[in-house]
Image (cartoon, rainbow, N blue to C red; front, side, top):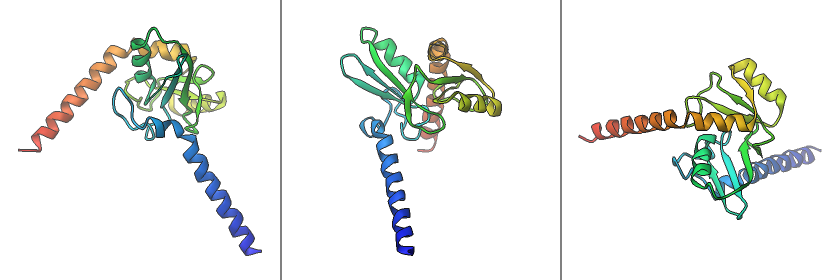
Length: 171
């Protein structure tokens, strides 16, 4: 009897590990963001994956870096845009997701956070706990483009400070 329970627990554990490995297959193919170099597994809750109509795919760490790519590839049509669900970290259709803009959680590559949720209830619960406004994908993308200059400037300043600190430590 005990052996059967132990076997069932072991099988369940192994299946959950296999599920986690398979869930982030996109991260294995693109472990870091092309634009900023950030670890996409560490940012699984904000990562994005775009599949263009020519079959090419690009994984980014955030909607900010996706916006950079979409602007640079204006002649390519996105066939599917996916985003990590904030709660489960599973990829979901970004255009069908419930987005939350702002709130008190720091954003990824931006001062204005943008998070996606598969379920409206999860987005509403997040807003209750952290603030923010419910939005569509188009509204989240518009916000990403509107804050692009300020966000890029902030990123440059952070990197400049990091280089200065690293340089000061080598003397």
